[in-house]
Structures are given as C-alpha cells and as structure tokens.
Image 1 (cartoon, rainbow, N blue to C red):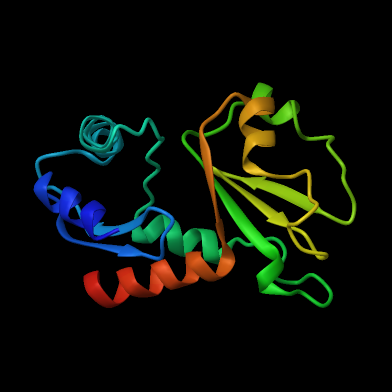
Image 2 (cartoon, rainbow, N blue to C red; image 1 turned 180 degrees about the horizontal axis):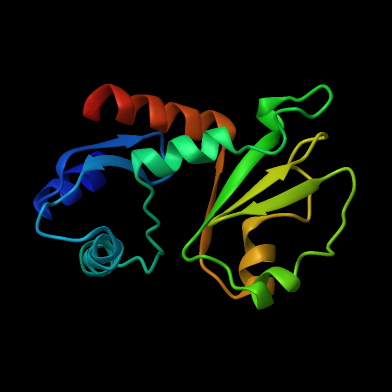
Length: 164
C-alpha cells in the first residue's frame, strides 16, 4: 500500500495516505483536475504502473458525510454496524438499472439504493449472502466496490482530521 500512496503522490495528489489493505486512498485533489476527471486519470495510471485494470471510485468528504447521514438501517431493531456494508457505484443508476434489482429479496439480508450507493445489511453476516458486489455489477451493468461500515467511518474520520 505504500507503493499505492507513492503512486498517487507522483500523479500530483497531495498527502496521499492508504487505509488498510483494500485500495482505500485518502488524498487532497490535484487542483488542475475536475472531480469527474480524477478517477479516469488514476485508472489509467494504475493500469500502466501496476498492470491492474480496476475501477477507481471517488467520494468527497461531503459525499461521505451524506452516506453516513442517510444510512437507512441505523433504526433497524438490534442494528449491528458490523453487518452493514455500502457499495459505491461508479455512476448514478438509471431507473432501468434499479428496476433490474428492485424486487430482489433474500431475507434476512436487505439492501437499499440511495444515490450512487447501495446499503447492504446482512444481520447474519456476509458469509452466505447473495447480495455482493458481483451480483449488483452484473445485474445493473455498473462498476462497483464495497466497503464495511467500519471502514467508511474510519476513512471519513481520517479525511476530516486532515482536510477540515
């Protein structure tokens, strides 16, 4: 992960720092780029430098705060944050994409699409759930990546300490 942080710095992104071993990078933006242009630049750079073809999904501090505030499962009876994950989508899903999954039902697991995120709550854990990244990527034809609620809160905390 130190190579990844160094790579971001080489691209001109200030203060790049990784969080755990899953490709989470907290950084301040390159003022020459608009937010929509940042992800493609990083994707191309990762392909060239590391030979990985992976989607890069970026959320600002404001977007991360919104994600925390709109969590639809916080009021769930006996809510356990370790059973919650959020999938970050590469784009705002269309009505057609949402329709492809809206009636999917695998109790007790549940999900809710809010904006460019899918909140997934699995009260019995994620070991046997059918609601995983590949499922939504294939059904909705969208790039996505998932993170645990704990990781999301930690990333936001780091970013707020550094950039607010």
